[in-house]
Image (cartoon, rainbow, N blue to C red):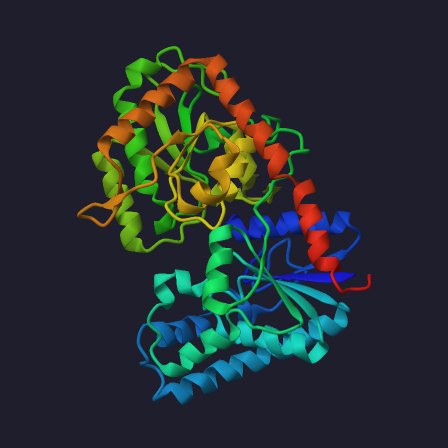
Length: 451
């Protein structure tokens, strides 16, 4: 069967792009042909439709007028007319792709769940109906869970949200990534869905230092013995990176308790070494939030290294630069922070488990509901937070202190370190592997379809 996995972008380091790659691999192993359809031109893009790119200028204007202020169009009908113009372009290009590549199944990622692009959502709906293409709407987030989409500027926008996010049709099945989302979809839309949790390929060789990445630490400006605290997520507000900054700041104040700790690169941590928060992810936050993070880091004497210009999903080397994979950054990490207060599931959590690194994390709602019961051993930031005067996420100071106590214990006790990371690896390999994903996907995709 020819399957198109469709999203605003592929081949990036965001969670949806990473999950798409996993689904592609599992579907290929099951004997299908898989095409990645996206609005960006990456090494992974098989079918390119520029009008669905995440930051398409025309769509950005539509979003502003739909959810902020109806200012560029005289009335809602003019707004609908502009949506229709872009919709027709997307529908036509998608129809051409369906025919050219003989697509007979589509997996539609977030396009039918977030209200980010009305033209894409409607265009995909129409093309699927026109060609009688069976689809799986794979929903990582819903518009009714996001503040951005909470106050449409006109009734027509509300109508579109109700009709297409997600659409209800006998051609379409739906999948979500956690039980909270499943309940929300049932309560809000009366739509049944299948839970497909995030997974990782635990059969892969462990990431390790090799001739390509051996200079990673040097390239990002660190020297042997410096400790890397890795924040591998994108820089967005809900990742609550301010909590990681406070943890690293407090750890740095107690650096004398880390004497003789051996960093991943095999060198002893000394008074001349640094403890650095390394951030290889895309910066997609507001300028205001980024400024607040930098100010907080300065107050906490926390050094941050933004190195996304050197890190992508895959390694590559051109004439001017050597690019590392996201996985290379995990290799040299001594500890991983994951303080997100809101996650659909948690790709970076599984990545840290696979990398066999201790994890400092906030217990976000989905973790508490769907993951915690598995018995992972984490350094917890708790599951309750407040907001500071700067509108940054805060937890009790005693929790930060307790986290730092545990960090020092695990970094100074190699037996404890290996016990924790091996315990977590074993659990994840059992419950969140590609083998688990294959069982679920084969059941969904093969239902009512002749291959």
